[in-house]
Every structure is written in structure tokens, then in C-alpha cells.
Image (cartoon, rainbow, N blue to C red):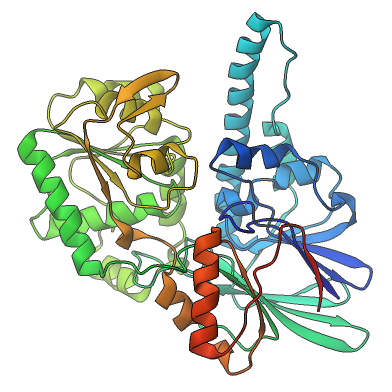
Length: 464
């Protein structure tokens, strides 16, 4: 029995792990690399395993850094099933097609430049047709359902509390009469998020792969986070400025809408015109509304008691069409604009930053992780000017980072989630974290539980 680490090693994107049991090989997640250009170039490298030899894929959740290379995998010969929760299947259908359209559009734009320069044309990472073929392989499962996959593998999806449909995977692998319980954490959620349930407690495991996105830091308490958001909005409204919130289309956009609705219910939301300007986020919000079985008890009670949509913010408008997005720039009163992508590396958020960054009365509010090499990271790190779509833009707006809205557990949240496993001293591998965060979290695990974790190398293979 062997485990191979092919992604999210000393970085937070590109998740991919191969588990070999006898002659059968299974892939857990197949994520796209995102962030710095040197990192995204990895997406075009050949897989370090033969897609034709992978029997099935098991997916933890629908974020692109966990599913984004599935169309490439299918195009290169994968013929098995892709197992996921029902909500993850729903989200994957919109996210993979969106990723394909972005890849095609980016390639078309580059090829126009290459054509004028007499350079060879490029092919997109994959096409919408490739994504459609990948979607045909998806198989939906319920939480807690034991799923037999192949001769020697059974998996159970348990709620990770990260985004709608997210799961950690409890796998039971048997080879030559020897059984190993292997736990793939995926992304563990921050407790007390809006709408979705908190992470479930894991069952005992012999082997643990655990994420470490925020393994070296703590999030602000929720009341402090809400006060910080309110204070920023109040100041911006007094200044007559706009608030621009780059937000991931799945999870963070819905979280922010929920928190804005809470402020409105308390009479503390200034009278902004509110826009969700992301076709993908709009579609994702509809899917959230269509999956009430994933809601936590608080949200279910609130809906039953009031009959209201928990995301119903006053003065809210969803702008799906391009012309609607462009018209936001002509609105004279203060606007609150939620747009994607969350790391500002693509999408309509680029246009809103271009129009708002250079004005001192405006406020840019980051509410999620900003990967190394992204425009978002440059702004958070204090760049005085940035280049957006080829144009240099001065940074005069106020830049804020609010960490308490993260969909990832912080250091203590990860340690708390891991606590039920600690007595069994599982063989532990720290993944899905930048080098500093992963190393710091490994030290905390050792101090707290007496477990000496391994920080695997990219493409490392270990016997279990």
C-alpha cells in the first residue's frame, strides 16, 4: 500500500494524492494550481501518474484548487467515476465550466498578441467540451454513506464545514489482509460560519493527511470581526466612497451576504447600493438556496420562524450581464460591490479595482486567503501601485484585511478538530499550507499531542 503526494505541498493549491492498494490506484482530489505565474505553469505539466491507471477519483469539495484539473485528467485517459457529495456535484457543474471558459478566453487573448508578434499559437489548458466530458463521470453520494470503491477501498464522506458540500474522507483500505484507516482532511472549516454546519468530529485513523492553510495563526473572534466590518462600512459611507469586496464565488460571497443581512437586521448597515457582480457567484448562491439539507440548525430555525431568505440584503442587486456590470461604474451614490475572483487574479473584480483603487474615499476589503504572487497579495502587502489588465493603477484607496470570515479553521481550530485522533497517534502528514504555515503547525501538533508529523515533498511516495 502506497501514498503519493502530487499537489498542495508547501503551497495551498493543486491538491492531488494517489493511494495505491495492490494493483489499483485511486486519486483523492485533482486540483488546479492558482496564484503566482510560476505556480500556475504547473497546470500544464504532465501528470506525475498515468490518468489511465486511476480507477476512481474521490473529491473533498468543489473549490477549483481541489477539482480544477479533472477535465485534463479525463482528456488524458481517465475513464472511472468521480465520487463526491451531492452539493459538490452541483457546484462542480458550474465551477468546471467557468474554469474552462476562463482558460479558453485567456488563451484567445494571448494568441491575438502572439499572432501580431509572429509567435506560435497556444492551446488552452482545457476546453468547455473537456469540462462537459468530465462532468459525465461525477457520481453523487450522501454524507455518512459507506461507498465501496474497488476491491480494497471503502470511503465515507463526513461534513468538513468548509463550504456547501465539503467533506473530509474517512477511507478504509485493505491489502493482503492488512487494513489501514486513512483520513484525508480536505479543507476543514472555521466554526460558526453562516448557513453551513460546523465540521464533524473525525473517527480514529491510522494515517492522517491534514491541511495547514492557517496553521500558524488565529482568526479574530466573530464579534470583533463584525465590528470591524461595520466600522469600515460606516467610514466609507461617511466618506461617500465605495466598498469593494473581492470574494470567492462559492462560500465567501454567501457568508458576506449573510453577515450584511445581520447588520441590516440590527439597523447597522449603511444605505449602500449592494451588488453581487459575478455570474459564477450568482449561480453558486442559487445552489446554496437549493440545498437546505446542508444548512445548520440556526439557519433552518431562522427560515422557519421568519420565512425569509437568510441572504436577503436590502438594496441588493445581482448583476449577471456584462452591461449591468459596466453600469455599476455610473452609479453616483455609495456602492458595496462583491465580486470575484477572491484573489483578484481574474474576473470582474479586476475592472472594479481599476475603477476604485486610485480614489482615496474608497475601501477595498479582503475577506479571504490571498495566495503568493496574486494581485490580492500585492495589495494586502501594501503595494503603492499595481498593474491591472496592462494599466498601472495607483493605490490610494484604504486596504483592509478581515481574517475572521475565513472558511478555513485557524491553528487552534485544526488542533481541536484533530483532538479525537490524537490518542491513536496516527501517522500524520501536513499538507495544503505554505512552507512557514505547515512547519509551524507541525510543531504545534508535536507539542500538543506528541505526534511528530511529516512534511512531505512534492511527488514523494511513502509506503503505508
